[in-house]
Length: 99
Image 1 (cartoon, one colour):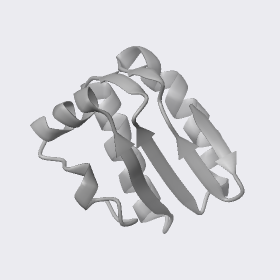
Image 2: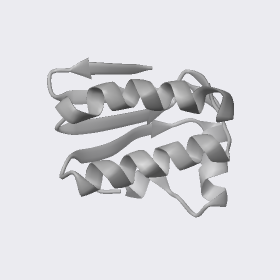
Image 3: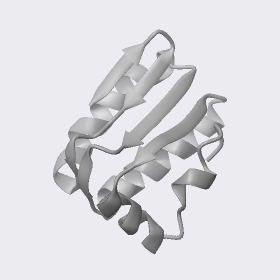
Image 4: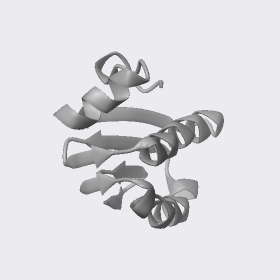
């Protein structure tokens, strides 16, 4: 779900990213974020997201930007893409390092 490859943090929630996973996921992310120069988010293996998961995503993108880290969405699967569209988020326009 969260790995570190050199200075790149890779976040790829598998299965669900809902209120039930957010607390543990946030703890895991916080352990790696200080070391990361770049954060790559991949939702292609995420089957379901709720508003808590989306809030985690928004918080992650805002905090990385504020810290001067690059952040990019590498991919989004169908149901997550549909969920994000409800909030007016279109990922393909955002994958240039700035969210």
